[in-house]
Figure (cartoon, rainbow, N blue to C red):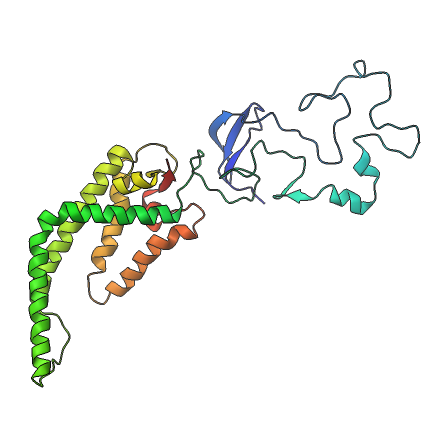
Length: 302
């Protein structure tokens, strides 16, 4: 079974680590973070005097006295050969797997760190090791950005929203008056004039939001809301600020779902798709939303 993507010891150079993408070795390398791996397994330790990770000492360099753990009794095994002469259950206990890898087969990575550890551990970083953002940070950043965008766009959308609210107020007041007079309304359909003011207000709001997102993410890598939460947007495989094309795909996907949500009949379906888009990082192994997958981006910790 193939190991998951991550940094492992370079099979061609023990002083380097090389990135495994889950199927094959890539060309990404970095210096070793720890001493070269010890290749022995538990129960097959190096003999006394052997240098850690180095070649075994020659016969001439070995001391004349018996090796550590070598006893005169013929039935006692030498130190380092203990597991080979113990009962089967003890040998199996000495070969217990840890994280789908036997104890003693060191990976060259520090266990317990995000995105590192033993094969089989869920990755929490980009391929080059930058930590991914949690879901709640993204949610709170989106709330902050929505408030800022609403304030910025108010001079452009305020008039339309005012007219929209007046039409709604007149509609509900007339409906209430008719109900009190004994002539309840036979339909709940909003008057066409409501859409005359609502649609321009919504479209202008989307435009302001898109420009806000595009400028901040391409120039700074993050919107003010994301900066406040210590997160940023980047391409999954390339560090740095994402290009304009990726930002346009990323936010265009979200706006497209929002616009489709305004259309009768299909609005419910696209609303469900928009909800899935926001929730997708909760179970995605790369912590990407659907709009991240479209643009090949990730939201990361700064």
